[in-house]
Image 1 (tube, one colour):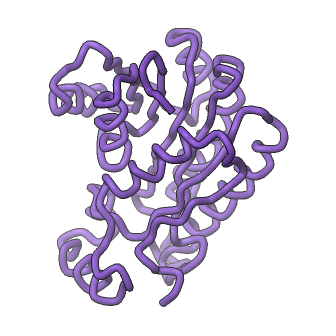
Image 2: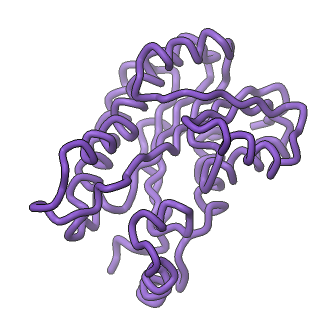
Image 3: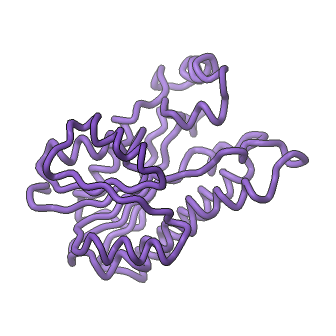
Length: 242
């Protein structure tokens, strides 16, 4: 699919996978809107992308319906919507230590957020448009401390399948990454981030953990392939096999 004259909203586009996708889409000639909760992070991302004319930014909390509705009124027509947003701070805890507030933030960012993006964004999409969300390997290889994230990822994939039926011909898909070296790992592993990722790299059939560009490639495929909907695309280096 030619990206010239296409307009793409990327929620979570100020860092990690979303930023990698924004860079790729801009390089292909698309107009890109990156959205997130922090204006400072959005401005830093704009600088990192060299402030191209086809880049816009928008401050929004996708767990707040009024903010999501206002976002789409501001940015108007779109061709594709992508969300890589995830607020997992405090969520990776053993059951006795987990706080409901942290669990609620995961649900709001990774389930209610996509639901609201679909509700208010679909009317703005072109007839051959798409919505693409990010779940994750935790739904398939859950571990201690990861019960909330595992459950929400699985729920998001169920939502994707249902929306693909309800919103057709708009396509709805998900990418399920494995372990990817992004800033979010600082919240999960803290100072042990590098050691934790290196240990997993030795176990994976691919011989390494993921890079943001790997996930951007998968997201770009789902944006562009007009015959793929209701699908979860696994990009995890063989993690489900071990």
